[in-house]
Image 1 (cartoon, helix red, strand yellow):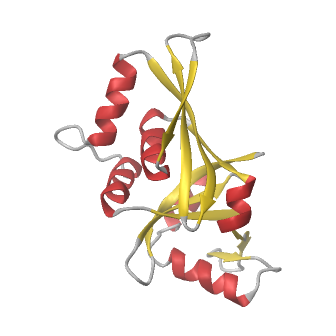
Image 2 (cartoon, one colour):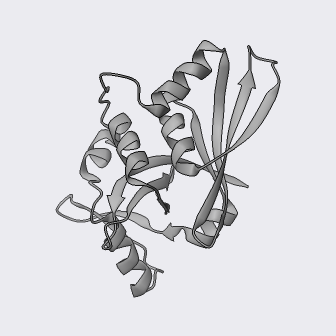
Length: 177
């Protein structure tokens, strides 16, 4: 089974490694995926709606797909094994009814393309079970958002707090209200 996710933001862990943080629609689970700095910059630029003066690699690929009448229908993050994640691009050739193709991709590239083509991002239950961080959105009395899971261990809460140190969630929460 697959879970629909959105990009919550780009973060930096305590060792200065970059990651993209995915979050399910129900705001119950985060999936952090470590990525390279160039891919992090590409994703962040798209999240910020900043356009480079010339197409970057992910912009180029999105332009090629569009110009060749190939639709990126969805991306899936299918598996994780020893911190290596596996993703697939699901492409439809031509108009509706055209042949479907699946192409192996790094999750960072798949996510960057998904943002540029406004397609959905899906993550398998297997990946969520292996690397997801379970949380629950709780609004405190002073209207500040806190991320808490009443069943989470202190270790899991600490892990989440460290991963979120580099991610600004305030704008995301306000947009949804």
